[in-house]
Image 1: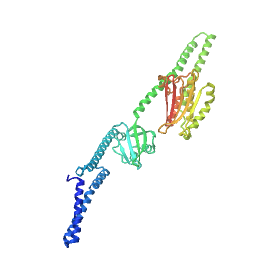
Image 2 (image 1 turned 180 degrees about the vertical axis):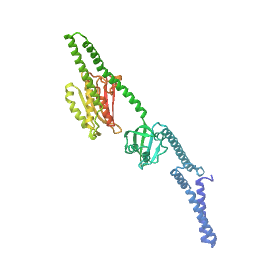
Image 3 (image 1 turned 90 degrees about the vertical axis):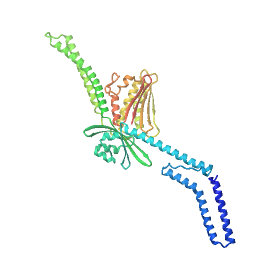
Image 4 (image 1 turned 60 degrees about the vertical axis):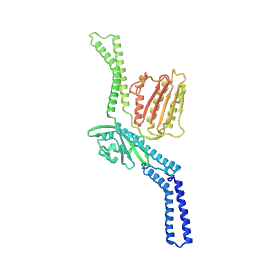
Length: 444
């Protein structure tokens, strides 16, 4: 009872009133100035003590807020001695402190968790601020660059000037391949940049992955596939040529003069050899064209206009073959950095393939040319047809040079198209289901 805030305040007020009455009485009825002075001092002390007693809650509240400001949640508060309401207030202080402590503990646990992931991923990570000061460099990056630390990005010049220049010019979402030599070891690094802001500070996070081994493996597989195709095509021409040459040689070695039928056989054999030789030369010329794709001349173009030009080019074909053609374009311009001639060539190849896929046996042939933007703002062009689709076995070969399912096809159209898209730092992909149709997707 004696510790209750209201009761204590009541007693102090009674004491204050009593001192005031006593002071007034002595001042009016006596000449005891010393007593009056002492009573005055006591009165001032009691008033100061009441103010301090009442202000204790404010001081505790200020201490609580300062603890939050400076992230010190170790203090505990007890107000049960001042009554129920003060007990509830101070208990709330303690609960808030405990909540902040739990949040801090969770943040530390999450930080340690993320730090463990960052340090153990098989990708080098480099993060630096707008002043080029390095704020993060994980263990894998140290292993790749053979550097125990980097104070700022300019330290990359000690590793390789090209790497430094590439990382500096990378923008959000950019990808680059860089070859560098570190301690006489050739590295082929795949770089990707992400820019973000945190607490009003700008940062750039660059991932570096050494793909030298993967590239060598894929290069070997690609060469093996190409050699198989080249061997198949060359043997198709060389084998009959060699067989016919052997036959004619045997006929010419005979001592007896050649009869007219034999001469006709020889003439036919020579024509066949000539025809197969021309086919082999044509095949070689096709291969040479595949390896001579001109470098793109980039300019800013509206992708909608390119699609409209392609649609106009094929409009007579759509009408002739009864193909329902649809073009879906956004209302606003979609600007891309590209060589319009090369990209239109890719579109022409894809639309021609779509026409061949739906023409003929398809009951209601339909082709859709769609332009859209993904959630990351990247432009995408899709060529959709409702043809018979591509089976799983052929899906893995359609981008292989010289692979074709057409009697008159050269087998380089899709390979060339993918090569052009890669030169634009984009990609060409296909999705198909047998008897349901095919979708070719160009991503920029």
